[in-house]
Image 1 (cartoon, rainbow, N blue to C red):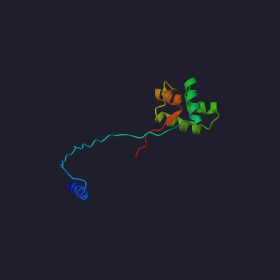
Image 2 (cartoon, rainbow, N blue to C red; image 1 turned 135 degrees about the vertical axis):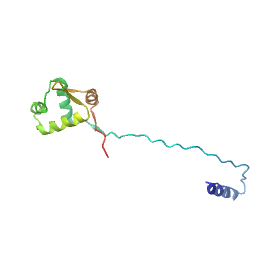
Image 3 (spheres, rainbow, N blue to C red; image 1 turned 30 degrees about the horizontal axis):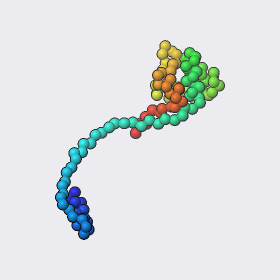
Image 4 (tube, rainbow, N blue to C red; image 1 turned 180 degrees about the horizontal axis):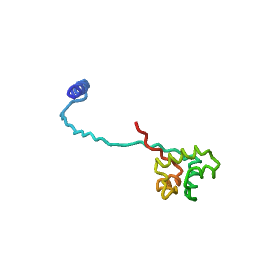
Amino acid sequence: MDSLRKKLQKELQQQPDLQIKQSASWGLPVQLVKVPYSTIKRTTMDILMKMILLTIQKLDVTEPKIIADFLAVEPLFVKDLFEKMQRTKMIQQRKGIFELTKIGVEQLQSGVYEHPPEKK
């Protein structure tokens, strides 16, 4: 820090029309703060997920195969989406019937799917 001040004084003194009248030095305390955070990836909800959520909202669904048959979609795709939506707490099973959670309703209305945070 001292070398920077001397270098600046030297450069200013080389200019004939400048004169240093007074010099002062001061500092600010620095405090480091660690803030925990996680990133959330948001994407447009795919059409199959929307159709599944709308079906769960309108009908009493007890298992993913019912929706797969109803929508004429491969059961493996529906089962995979069910697991994903349960992990992200978009749907839950209560008394044997799947229902949307508050998170599921919000994401369905916005049309945006929030992926779970990635673990590194």
